[in-house]
Image (cartoon, rainbow, N blue to C red; front, side, top):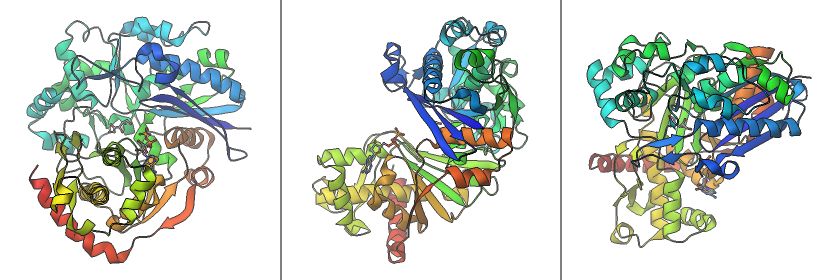
Length: 517
Ligand code: ADP
Ligand code: XUL
């Protein structure tokens, strides 16, 4: 019997899925929510703010305690001796800073002690900046200036210098912590940190997650000398190696085999970022399928037929764990914007849905840029949505118009800001909380004029890890794994062609409203 295990080290929780490759079913899924299970870390949503609200950190010891809790639960839920391979992913961009003790300690973890107690003395920086941190605007400018402009950074790394990306974060640490930076022997991403802990050795970074650092050259898949040099001194010695996503890094460490009952022969595949892993777990590894996740923020990602970067600098190119590259566009005003409009009128989701159904496409000539908070696609540093239409609408006196205009504005903005990817998707897979709302998805389908299908998998990040482990260690093909484990709802939502012209008209309106920002 062969089981494969996938791990997801995400912002709010540490999760795992175990799949049975003989019977093609999910053996168990466990989640440790940081806020609920580890309240001593004062991070109800998995992070805390620094001195300024733009600084956002997590405690890496919290992640380690969550790993111990997770494996304890897994041990009670299934027979871990049947697991033959492990891989997984972490939230992208976050970084862990370690001193020279790390390199000795990681190979000799004692199963009678906790992970957090043993790794604590290895941290050269107690807290990890994560992807929600936007404190590095100055460092982004400095790196861009040193390289001769953001265009060059984008050509080299797939993204312009971005505040949450690891390079600018490292530069800020170097500038503000003159003692701690030289004491740092290794800087890991969340993914390579967890992978190192599991395999009991200092592990590499894969090209998928490495591309989210503003340090990796997309053409060579190695650290880019100019970017590394412009970021911080002696940085190259502190970075792990970069490897392709199919690399087997080694076997599970004694810590896990002795403590949780794994066989010593379990192989571990290099971890990747949560979005690249989700690409695998949603069966979208090959070009042609696009995934839109309508969660806290909305993300749009797809495997790329050929690598291009966003000339406007808002989008990103990451490595595709199955080879080639993937594009990703993140919209911060996702579910929270939809909820803002719903709550403003004290509506339930059912009332919200009825409002959508009772208002015609085009919203009777009322348009909205639904940016209720800071936005990154496009860059907008305010908290006022822009409304254009009749006075009832502009003064928030019409719930129906506000609701329809918000959803239309979100998806038209999404369409416009993903055109740089130059792909006409054959199908859009949707996932995340709002994807269950049929009325919202119909508008999405009409605006993109593409068939849309809802994904049934919830934990696509952890599932992607388990699938990659099975593929690269146990010889299963991705096609086999996709057909057994990545299910979609049977219903296909089809675009209404009659609405095409109407939405193209609104696109022009939205374009001119964007110019006023
Ligand atoms: P995340 O994984 O980012 O925490 P989820 O994918 O679980 O987020 O989505 C949660 C969101 O789904 C909620 O914030 C809520 O706004 C949204 N949601 C839940 N039900 C509906 C619904 N019926 N229609 C639209 N949005 C919904
Ligand atoms: C992607 C991004 C987030 C994180 C956390 O660029 O910042 O999606 O990976 O999920």
